[in-house]
Image (cartoon, rainbow, N blue to C red; front, side, top):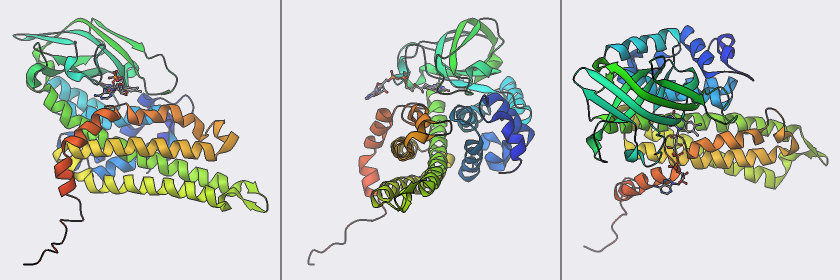
Length: 370
Ligand SMILES: Cc1cc2nc3c(=O)[nH]c(=O)nc-3n(C[C@H](O)[C@H](O)[C@H](O)COP(=O)(O)OP(=O)(O)OC[C@H]3O[C@@H](n4cnc5c(N)ncnc54)[C@H](O)[C@@H]3O)c2cc1C
């Protein structure tokens, strides 16, 4: 990761995702995350992982969350839009403008097809009415990518994406009542009869849910890559602390039970790392939903386990600034943001036969006589 002085602009206490994003844009670090430098071509998993690891190294979780959502789903979705979306995309990549992705509705989170935000399409005119909540980047976004309903019911074709400028009349933003994700700009947004021209549609009418599935898959991959980076950083820090902490005539690092617990965390993070290596391309190139669900569920379990174990191993110092105890609250986002663990586990179970048949072990050798 180059230009750490530039990156530090949005990092540290009081850091902010919008400033971090501007620094990344100025340093020309955003476009290389995508194949051929074009968000329309999808992400390069290695480049995405490297940038997220670099940001995570310097910034609090809220700031990295802000960057992560934009990189993984915001920009690729913008790339599928009309002229206003493409203009904004240039601003986002080149000058550090910020886009938020607003799917979670006031009245529906996991039950996404129950969402109530409406998009009325009347010839060349659009009208957006409804409310979104817990949206990363909401308070510093220049525009919102909004998943809205264009027809009644839960059918796959009832939903459509629309780009809503934050300054449009009828848009009202409020910060979420939490200090766990400082710098992420997480908030709630109301749309009161927001009028736009048809050019603000993103993708065709009725294609919203399919597009959501494609883009959330990449966000789940990004979460897994970031999870590996976070675990690596916290574990390296914890190991240093254990090696520096005297215990009898040695250090805590020499205690067998401490090393066993640390070893279990290493196994977990190596498993997640192997999974991202094995499945990253399937998600990046084909938006494979099962692969993304495996990564999401694996990352949630690994991050939760590693953070909990490291926080405890840091003793009282874990509660100080920079200690791992402070990561436990925000770290739980791996099991909620981008779809709760229960939902993705259902997706995994839906593919049980394919997943079992595809294990690298191959079918059992036949021992039956001819
Ligand atoms: C910091 C933060 C940032 C976020 N950023 C964004 C963003 O940028 N864009 C966006 O659109 N959304 C965002 N979200 C919202 C996030 O995607 C939702 O919180 C998530 O999808 C879960 O929805 P919910 O909160 O409504 O939980 P609910 O759907 O109300 O679920 C509550 C609990 O019920 C259980 N549950 C739910 N469904 C099932 C099921 N099928 N089976 C078993 N148990 C179940 C789970 O234990 C779950 O945790 C963000 C949330 C947070 C906290």
